[in-house]
Each structure stands twice: as structure tokens, then as C-alpha cells.
Length: 293
Ligand code: AMP
Image (cartoon, rainbow, N blue to C red):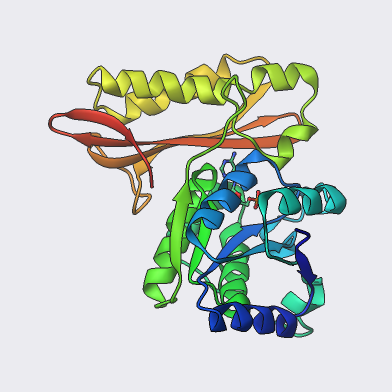
């Protein structure tokens, strides 16, 4: 079935109220479009659990830095519509920029501390843009549950804190990272990679896998695991390490020695293209296992 496409808050609220009146629960899948199997997995999770599923489609300008790829970010609307049709989205909310950011817009959400490390250190202002747009979309749509990918681990961690701190009445669900057969995490930015960069881009997944094995074998020295992640990337042709981090998966603070839920995160540039990936491990006195956020 072809989804309804809405551009205004009034239309969306009317449709959501209609679904609720029928006793349906409302799921929201926030995206910037250029949909791939990663997004499709979020839609399927929402489809399984919710009676009415809304896809948010908006390339949010405020989460891009001045030198980032906002203008060239892919916007294949017809293909996105086809994915939504196949996956059974009920409603696409694709607002105009002025709808989200009216003139003299001046209210921002900031999650202090957490927004300034890892991705936030490399992309100042990124999480201020993300948190603001996500809180706005929650207010505009009013979903019961919103679906996010672990691919953007820090985003999930920061948003969980925002939802807790501000008593936002939305449950967050985190879905596993979907990968290419060789392990590269799917991303709308993978289309920027040339064939050689694409071949070497699997280094992120391999470095994380090697670090996981190190921890499985009993390594608990955070600095050492972090260094081996970094070295593996530095040894990859064409790869420039942005950061390799091993931190507490709830607070994003340093953890030494390794224990509890730990996030291993990488950001790597191939030319102008910046890729991120991560892994979550649960480490106890008995041993370590892969975990989710
Ligand atoms: P984006 O359109 O890149 O802002 O992503 C929208 C949502 O899709 C976010 O919650 C992402 O974490 C999620 N996502 C992106 N790539 C993947 C992937 N490879 N696997 C799972 N979820 C993903």
C-alpha cells in the first residue's frame, strides 16, 4: 500500500489521532532518507510491534557542520517511497525546513558533557541539532515508541539521557547494526566511497572484531585495546583515523580497567567520506560477551 505523505504537523497529528482512536499504537522511525536495509530493519521492527508506523524523512541542517555534506547528502525521494511501500509504512512525514525551523527559531536541547565527546568532539554542535530535531519530532508526531539503530551508538546514548532527563513520554528501541556481507555497516554515505576505498572500508569492522577477540581472551587494559583499534586503522591504506574510543556505554566516560557495558567506537575518514562503527561488550568477572545498547 502506498503510504500517505504529509508535510504539515496538522496532517500528521490528525492521522496519528485517527490511528489511536482505532486503538493502534504508534511507532516512529526517524531518518534522513536515502533508505537502505539498515533503515528497513528499523521499519520492520516497528511494523512487528506497532499498529501504525510513521517514517520521519528530513535531512536536518542543524546537525551538519559548516564543512559537512548537507548540500550533497543523497535525497532519492522516489526510491525512498518505494522502500516505504514495500516495508509497509503507513505515513511519511517529510516536513519543509521552515516547518521544523520557523523564522527566529531559538530553542535548543543540549545534553551537557555527553554531547561534546567522540562524535561531538569531531562534530561540534552535532548533538544539539540531533536532540533538538528529535524532541521536536516527538512533539510533532507523538509516538509511543521510536526506533533507532545501534549504528549511531552515541546518538542512542545521548537521546536516552535526554528522554530520561526531560521526562519525554516515548520509549526508545535500539535495533542491531545491519552490515554488508563483508562486514561494512550500511550507511547512506557508503555511496561516496570509490571502489578502492570501499574495499578498505571493511577495516572498521575488522578492527572492532579484533578488539573484541582481545577482550574475549581476557584483555582488560582499556588503553591497550584502544591503541590496537587505532593501529589497525592506521595500517589501512587510505584510512585516516578520526578517533578510536573505548568508553562506558551509558555515561561515555573513560573506564579502566574494562568492566560493565563498554562501547568500542571508531570514526574513520576515507578521503572526504567519514564512516563510523561500533561494538558493545558486556564485561563481568566471569568473562565478556557481545551486547546491545
Ligand atoms: P540516518 O538516516 O542515517 O539518520 O539514520 C536513521 C536511523 O537509521 C538511525 O537510527 C540510524 O542509527 C539507523 N541506521 C543507519 N544505518 C544503520 C545500519 N547499518 N543498521 C541499523 N540501523 C541503521
